[in-house]
Image 1: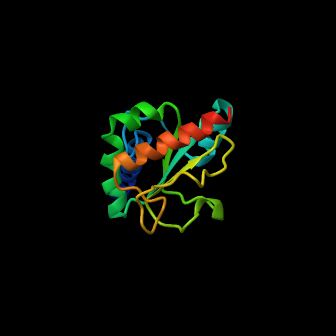
Image 2 (image 1 turned 90 degrees about the horizontal axis):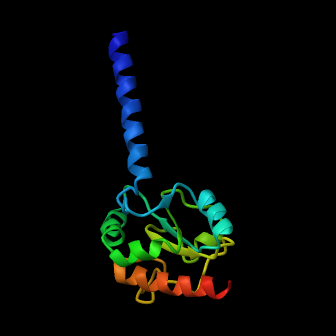
Length: 155
């Protein structure tokens, strides 16, 4: 009996370890993109590098979030531009109204200045109700262009 419990615990630890590996490799948003693990890490890296942040807020259980993954991971332009950003994707919804400009929904993509301030003027121009919801890579690419322009204009 004790052996079965021990085996069960070992399998649980192995599964948790595999889940962490999956997340560290992009969690489906693109293993080839250099994702940082947390918003806190992204803020530190952005301040040090002067790069803007692209923050992807998502949930594992969300079908629209799952649909977004290939839009990001499959875009050559997003991959190329990702080097000009500190890229972070997380299921943790940051505290504070500055990250919920039009609600706490998922998925949403926010762009932040290197100092951590949200770029309110960078949003999905074709969105009807939720301005920070993106369903197509082209929409994300356009916002990345705008965010890059704003961030680097300030330097």
